[in-house]
Length: 113
Length: 117
Image (cartoon, rainbow over all chains, first blue to last red; front, side):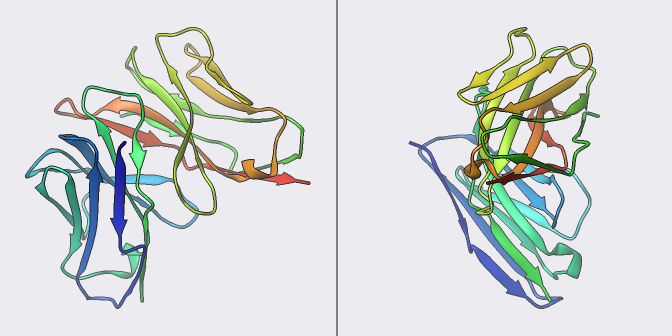
């Protein structure tokens, strides 16, 4: 069965510090991968998506970047965090060509102080 | 661009009663998918129910059912016999195509459901 992991689960970082959040998927190959951010009391905003290794598309201009160094690994990064980067970050995947379901990871709660 | 609107930020229901959560969307596509996701306090996103736009029959999953009105672009979720465990944020989502052919989920802002004992 497929499993999606995210770490860390929680993170508290000072403004201006770097960020690296990791997402890995097991049990599938060539998944489409997504990074979402959920600000407090709001819905999910799509940040990045990837249809393959090294292929990254950004949905909104922001302080963050994403990379996909391996088929089942998706990384969200920042060189210098802003206060507005605080939120709950969710990684998700679905099998390309299928619309059965988009599977979500457990999420990372990021607090920037 | 596709948009999803949930006009009820918060709803409450008595245990064992029925509640309906509203969702409207905007799209120019004719073939698409709609979803309701549940996010309990654990923040894990859980798929509740899925509807294919080409199917006229409303989807049902046990106590959960939808009222899909394609012409009106409306997709409401009905929860029957509400249970305490149903308390959560509920998100309506539209599955649409991005530029370049990939797909994405467009989410509404959510409805917080409280179940009163």
